[in-house]
Amino acid sequence: MVAPMAGFQRRCLSTQRGKAIFVAATKEHTGKTSVSMALIAGLVRRFGPTRVSYMKPVGQKHVLVTGKDGEDLKVDKDVAVAKEYFGLSAPYNAMSPLVLYKGYTKDFLDGKMDVREQKRVIQDGFEELIRSNDFVVVEGTGHTGVGSVVGMNNADVAGLLGLDVLLVGNGGLGSTYDVMALNKTLCTAGGVRVRAVLLNKVKRGKEDMVREYIGKALRTNSWDAPVLGVVPWAESLDQPSILDLEQMFGTTALSGREHLLRRYSRFELVTTSLRQLLKKLGAGGISAKPTCFVTHATRNDIILGLLSHSQDTLGEKNNAPFDAGLILTGTPPGHVPHSFVSEYIGRAAIPVLSVGMSTSEVMHKLEKFTSKMNVKDDLRTRNVIDHYEPEIDFDALLSCASVPPRPG
Image (cartoon, rainbow, N blue to C red; front, side, top):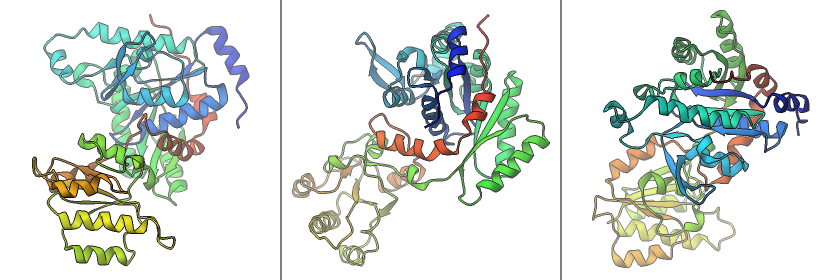
């Protein structure tokens, strides 16, 4: 446990304005939200849960929450995770002041949106947070240029709030630096300083080399920005759960809902005969791994064979648990299994999902899927924090962050 920063707290309390940093990323799915959650966790250890807050000025994907007066609010999904997981006290409308709904870009380009109002709600939300907290983690959306079409990209927002940037990039060397430099150019053009960088998803065993040579590249090119952390890649954090699959495909599991948080390390498309599948299962080549099978809803033999195998392994002490799942595919109405098969599915020991898409569409979506944090999945949030937080230099973070200027 890190000792509370009492002196820093007193300074912030006397001026009524805390420090803040803007977390931006070089591209989508870089791990920016994972970094932000780890930052909050480490700062909460130092200042306490009532003196740290989080903000997503411009959100793209929203969830419905209940406001303090009982009203329904649309807020950025990551704000909901942070507020609920850490028990943050700030109101939702300050933490998530602007959410871009479907059609927002067209409305903006048609002149239906007030640019000044966009800026006002973001500034007002931030002022409410910075006056009542010692530190505010402000997270951008996507890569640095996302939001440009509505005049609110990440560099614009950081500049609006007077914040320096912590730039998150994925591990590597030459290409990693090149992409970071491209994003820095956009920040510089907007009068925003990249104050620190963090390398994420670095290949294990390469962390020290990446830290050393990215550091040299930053110094050689006069960035004046330290490497705040180098986080190794953790495959398990990217594995989707049944809950993730439900949301991705817009469906609900037909069975096994007690296993909504079960994660899968592989997806196997079954096109072989039942005999071949059972032979493979019996050899132990699959059963020891958390595998989600994919097959067409008309393959009654495969469906019943998998359900029977899962039932047979339940009471066998010498067998590894059959932590499987099953996705049934087929273009509607062909994705609905036969009625007698549905009866067995309803009693299945494994999660089964019926997806109204072709098999190729389903496999393509699974291949492109990136697991995200979910307000219903505290375990994943905890696993992310446990992995990221120890890799971050919080003393350097506090040195890099500054007290933002008051709005003019």
